[in-house]
Image (cartoon, rainbow, N blue to C red):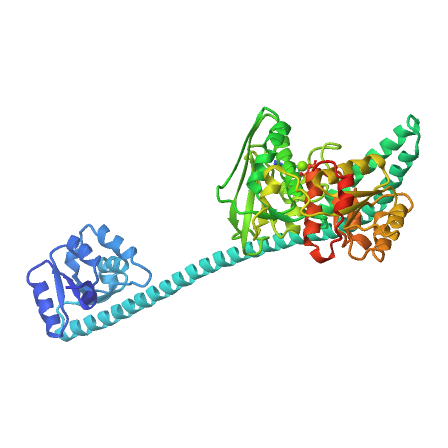
Length: 565
Ligand SMILES: Nc1ncnc2c1ncn2[C@@H]1O[C@H](COP(=O)(O)OP(=O)(O)OP(=O)(O)O)[C@@H](O)[C@H]1O
Ligand SMILES: [Mg+2]
């Protein structure tokens, strides 16, 4: 019999004589099935399964150990109040039957039926007991359903809470990132503006100090004063340069760079800067694609990171620099695409959360007065951002730091020659160069370099002299002029020379990048100090780009100034 079917079942405990069988027969005739129990233990056992009601005789209970049964009755769940039908002998009210009174209390939901009784009375009592029990089972079902839906609601609530929490966390994180980005952006605009003005102010300061020094007689005691002023001014210029870098307003010379070779080239310098107590490991993926970056600035950035790592490892440790191809996935600041990733990892002291959050801010430093300017990471961040990449930092206190520079991949291959051995490029064709510099030593040095490359060189020591030469019809394919010269600066010279020699190309030699903006912005330029290879490349590049029809051949003149064949 399935437990489900037992809800209409009568449990009969009437151990004396044939009472139990008679009662069972009466019930069966009315369509009620029953189970006859020989003793109380059987009743308690059966009660643990479903039953409709219990029919029990008074004598089956009196003087028995009823703890099992009363325990079961007391521990019924809240929906259950099992009906009992108690067959008594004596009737006439409880006061005359105190035993029945005690049983009433214990059994709870009990109906007394005095013997002898008419079968109809038993059947009607049994039916009403079963109906009552049926309602209890209904209540159980409803309670069960209620419980189920409550459970469902609770789990839904819990997952909802968890989901809300998760979304809130994500939202907060995004907000924090946005805030961080906005803060850096604002700082960048502010410092960029200040740095730009400062840079403009420094140009005449340095330029005039430079001019002043050149006017002094050798041995003049003012040399020392001017030199220290120049030193301070150029330190300020370096600082301003880093600020401009942070503000992404740096004058960059971007090209396709083989980062692996660049790292190899830096290896000695890094080892030297870090000292013997720090183990340095530099490596890169074999199929590393080229990156779009200014190689000189990248070297500076990597050096900055290496020096930060050194400072974080006062008692020694290890520095790992690795480069590989990276995809932007998961790096918030990056547009989707392909990148070159340079990871600089140290085993140093690491940063706590607050330090990490502020590390990139300009002038944020924990290194104490005079030790750090707090512009190292700012510069690296600005450089990467200006190039369309990013700087990411991961650090935990006591667990070291990993800084990653992400750079966009270059579509074209790097100029192999340039990286191989920085070889100078010989003159791609015959060309005549007008070289203008007021400083004799510098001019003759540059002239030597150019002649050595195979160019013919015409020298002028001032803007005025250069203009005079051009007016007399001296032909030139290219004019290379210094920027800072007495009387007329390089940009002014170029402006006045243009109408005199419209097809002549011009190259500006500059000490600092201010002329990158303003009237000279569009003029190709080369920063001082430069090497012959730098000069050779830019000159060759300019001369090969020029339409060949415009070239004025000057083979005869070239032979005069050329030193080596
Ligand atoms: N590798 C690192 N390990 C632990 N802390 C670091 C690391 N790199 C940077 N920091 C923390 O970030 C701060 C800012 O670094 P940042 O390079 O911008 O400035 P700095 O090193 O203090 O000064 P500067 O680089 O201008 O000489 C540091 O002062 C230091 O607290
Ligand atoms: Mg630093």
